[in-house]
Structures are given as C-alpha cells and as structure tokens.
Length: 133
Image 1: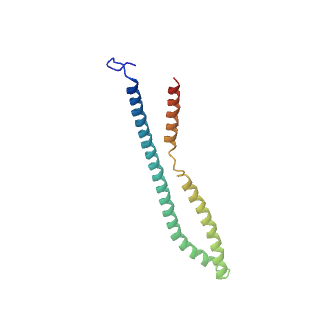
Image 2: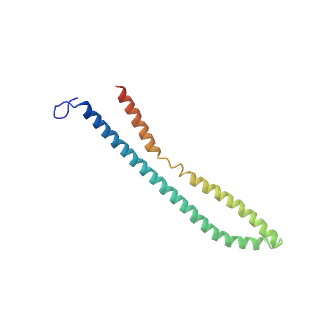
Image 3: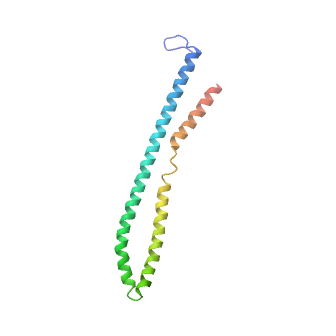
C-alpha cells in the first residue's frame, strides 16, 4: 500500500494503525453506550418521580373522598358496613394503580444500550468481512 506521500507502509505500521483504529472504535462505542444508559436512566427517574407524585396526590384526594363516601353510604347502612364497602373499592383502585405503575417502570428496563449493541454487532460483521479479503 502506498502512503499519502508515495512511500509503502510496512505490515507493522498497518497493524499499529489497525489497532489504533480498533481502540478508537471501542472508545466510541463505549461513549455511545454511556449516553444511551444515561438517557434511559433519566426516563426511569422521571417516570418514577411522576408515579410517586401521582400516588401522593391521590392519597390526599382519596382521604377526603373516603370520608365523604363512608358518610354517604352510612346513611342507609351501619357505619361499619359503609367503611368495609368503601375499603373494598379502594383496594380495587389500588390494584389498578399498581398495575399501571409497573407497566410504566417496565418501559425503562432493561437498561441495555440497544443502539450500541447493534452498532458493535455491525462493526464485527464488517471486520469479519474485511478479514476474509
């Protein structure tokens, strides 16, 4: 192979350059993986924070609504029966909220840098093809 100035490069030089290029490629892939993991971590943090805030606000709202509902149901029924009916309804709502929260958290995992993994796979395919030549 001729160098830019017309001189031939030795095998040692070519190996050294190939090693340097491979090292740079690995560094770039690691940077991509870090960036992708940071992005997924931020999404998980925001999702968890929003889920927590929604739960806290729902707790305060439900505390007020529970009192009103128990009082309303206690008009035709004994107070203990009204409280039991309302508690059962609250457990149902809590189960639904837990399922929705779990679904939101699943969107952030697994924290695998998919783009970086695909890119490394493509790089390996290209390297194998070039090695066969």
